[in-house]
Image (cartoon, rainbow, N blue to C red; front, side):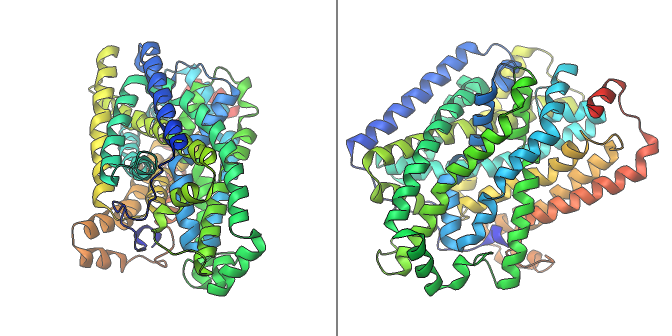
Length: 528
């Protein structure tokens, strides 16, 4: 399966990453870190309650909402994970980048207004709060919180894995110190600023990333000799690299993987809690109107980095024009540092620092809220004092940061692979209960429980356990488990889990409809 793809990638290697010795790049990086810290301090002064910390007090407008929605999905994955997948598998990865913009449009249509109205009807700060209101079930609340924690660890690891490369590229420090130092800075930033700081850092880095992506695309196309030359070089090495479905497996497998990624990254967008909880934050319903096209277009433009850098670098390697002295995970940093002007490199790397910080802040906030708010409330032991709940949330940030840092340190998975694992966990757990639940009166708590448990089981069994077994040296156990996986190894487990969860949700809800009634105050919401 894709999650266990083995490509000579060791996340803690340092030899293939060039170090910027240009004062312009160093200045960009230092300035951006300073800006991020200042935004964090400003956010700290604005944060008085748990509501301020988690949803900014419903204060953000159209452009900020759209840009923060796009940037939390793109982040470090787009610069490190994206180019490495394109470099390794060719056009297979474009089924992610060309379909994800559709995911924004779908998510806005099916969830934006309903979740924002829900925040007016009841006091909801987290996805688990919203799902508790919809299903009136502590089991649903608790399972939602648990699924958030599991997905956050994988997703946060994606960003920390990218951060270690960016820190080394800018400041010249060993990768291990880039990981540990970056994690510490991230933790301090997140504990200070909360979501208020995160959304404004998102907005700043989104504008920077879009600008930089256009420049990177132009330089990458020039570097590779144009799309015609790039395509010829890749086709000469392996025609599958530029085929409609790419080079992930044989022809039939590649088609299946392309379709699976299309499902996972379009439909699955509506299950990403760090995206859909942003709708709670909007100032009013009117500002939601233009958010989807702005976010979708922004994501499409920013994806030019992964598309152009990955293909042009692979093309030049196959043509013998450059030596492959780097791993797939290092393609993005290597191209930007070695083949673009200092100003462009500084702009991109600085934006990446901000992107990783702000996106990781979103993950930490929703994960910590699951620990301090969702799980205790599901167990019937809520933290009543708001100040205490806020402090417990901030302490939970530390535990999640440490766990995710450990995943990066001990795992040899590609940054892009970690990203698909996190996305798959969230998609399977939350697409059925959120999308169907907020649009179908017949959805029941038993359907929600069955779908979350089913989706998590598939993901844990075929993603988390095999990866952990490999890391622990029990490769035989991992192989034994995967012998029962009913699809080609390259077929993403997240798609299987999502489909299983949807079937369980619909089937169990239909079987248990007569046992439940929709809460009275939610009838107008689902009819809206």
